[in-house]
Length: 182
Image (cartoon, rainbow, N blue to C red; front, side, top):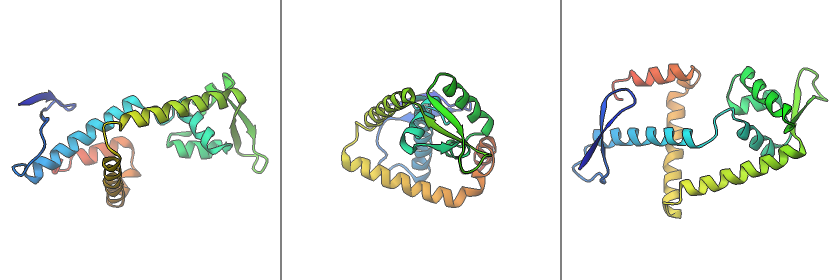
């Protein structure tokens, strides 16, 4: 039995909850892979902290120690103005401290305060628990296989579509959406 779902772009999509067997052709399998990967991506985005979230910044500083504001912004992959806003909020509530760099007066070093260290440890612990829960339905062998396949796709797509990554997210989405194979 198949369920009909309204897709995010207004088209009707079929969602089969049965394994693909020999009667699935390559186009069916590819379409199902794309739909499932898209759905998983949306779910992960919903469940996990965003690129420039306060929790993510705390965890990065917890794992990396002190870093410059520029390094943090680059690691987050967001605009400097957006990073400054979140950093200012974290500083105002006493979770991070900004100090002029001792080596380069044009930059600012950022580090966790003792209160920030406690918050970051808890955020990191919660993240680890969530990551365990997300893959709890898979065996260790299945996780290893999924990881190997995901890394293979990531490497291939990065090499083939790298120029699209330099564009804005909207340009990437539009470029890929307009391809005939999607």
